[in-house]
Image (cartoon, rainbow, N blue to C red; front, side, top):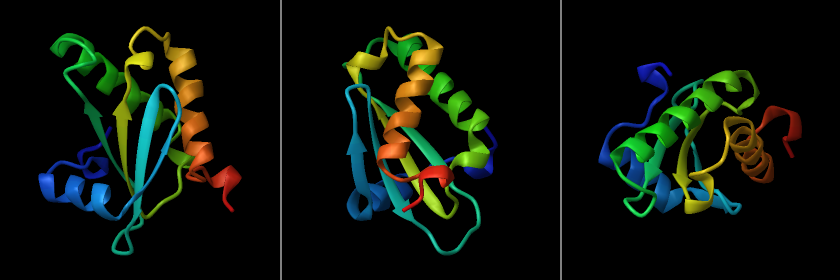
Length: 116
């Protein structure tokens, strides 16, 4: 995923947690906060140490970023998004994880095809 599409600093994460809305399923929590100053969306991924060791956490981050990259055109713009990984997602194969992630995005109305 491009650097310009990533949330990187603590202030950005804090703003999304504070002012954003959250939606969840058994595997993921997604926080979304609207931004007016850009036409792009930005993504951050958070994995707790409860998920597993660094190898497992980094694998989860890479898989989520890859799913977002594949569905980049479907996600609404002008948003900052944070994905929080829950334990249920650790042992999931890629296709199931993709389905679950799209489900939580659809639930949050963050996909262009299901915009309210």
